Image (tube, rainbow, N blue to C red; front, side, top):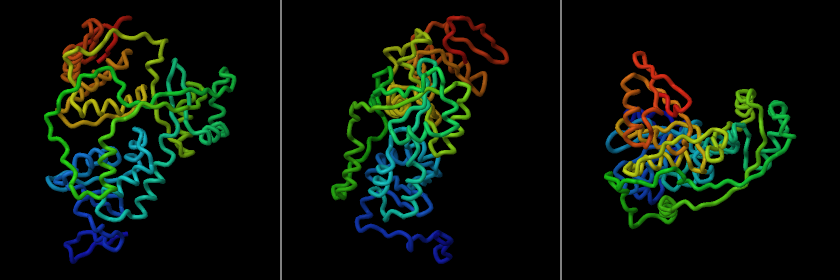
Length: 354
């Protein structure tokens, strides 16, 4: 590992592990052997590089000129969960980096992401299924004794096959604001071919495609055991809800108002959640004042099922109720509040409990 060099004020010296590329001035980030990434915020392609790093790494600190990130198993898990492929992560890191790719970093990325995202825990028709698009993974799951014991016996041991769409933009609003934030800078005119390839890829529109998936039903009471076992065999589960095909739970009369407008970053976060027409489990992280409440309201209006909103204070409860009424077409009787001082009585028509 790199040592601390007293000659440089205690800074880490990576010169023995990585080499600067001849065209390093056109590339926006430094990649170190311990998984730390340093991004130049003044780079002409900062915006594209920033969007990529947010998807694969955890932010550490972001002063004015240099932003620091770190690759972790959880950040790579999240990257794969939104559709990024292992080879693409390695490829684009190499293209954006001013230095050669440290061997340990590529090994770490492949180790953490090669099996992530290959198995889904899908809730559809009020039943739970393990789903994968990989036949070899399916065979591994079926042979595991713990998972075999968790299979639903009433399913006649059937393995189901179906096709699902991989189109990302599938949520209920098409209203998008013209952004008032700075647009990404133009790529340098002397950008290397491989870096230009990355920029072109960033600008491409996602195409509608279909993929074949295989699944089998598991017992609801075995969910925790199944999740634990899948982690043990290196196939951690991603949870999804097939709300569009849920005919057992009635839809709620709740839609976004025509005047409701999403900003591009809000729309992007929703695409991550609804990228294949299902609701994916996860955490959407946005800074203060970025409109997380509107993202939550849009999510509820897209799924259109009964929902529970957990808040940290009574003030937040009132804010959420007012935001639902501001952005959505929803009858006031469908919303109930539970605080120390306010306890609305729910009934059969209650749609949102805050």
